[in-house]
Length: 222
View 1: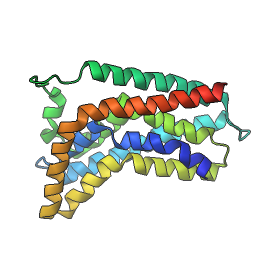
View 2: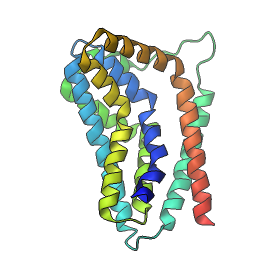
View 3: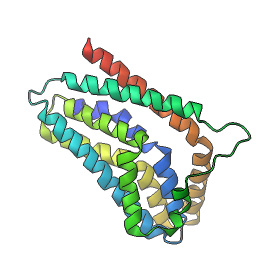
View 4: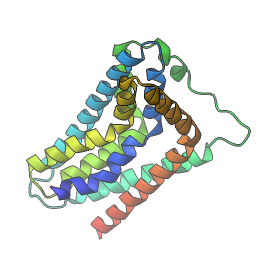
């Protein structure tokens, strides 16, 4: 089972550390319908990430019936690693300059008007279209699919990846549902920390994961 779980851990952590879904769920929880919309957003995130993971694992497993390490996974990681490095480079060029304030997107300002259904839909859209979430999700699922293990081990690894990748939404929701003063203080600290360090995270995490993918690809294609 370790052959399926180990290679996907870095990808799952990268998904969990993606600042955008964390920012969104924190804003949702601070809105008037925070609890209902927060639960809906988290459920949508889990379903979206589970769908991407299951689709890639199923497709990759079908291409790897012999339980050997396939070449396609190395080529895929070469592509994904290149994409992540380019995303990190673009984020570096677009990083906030001292003294300049970047206006948030209009849809982010309308979060307090979301319904539960739209909150869930927003989560699915973020999983499916946000590159810093989708690329590591595909990479982690591909690592599971390429592992020389049986279907049961891959299923366990896929479930674990979805849970780990959802910690960025699950933990704020759990803290909010506790409803204590300490929990509210913690959520406030998370909002402040995310606002301060989101740019650095969006540069560092893709860069490191992209380098790992490229290293794995080069090793696999030699």
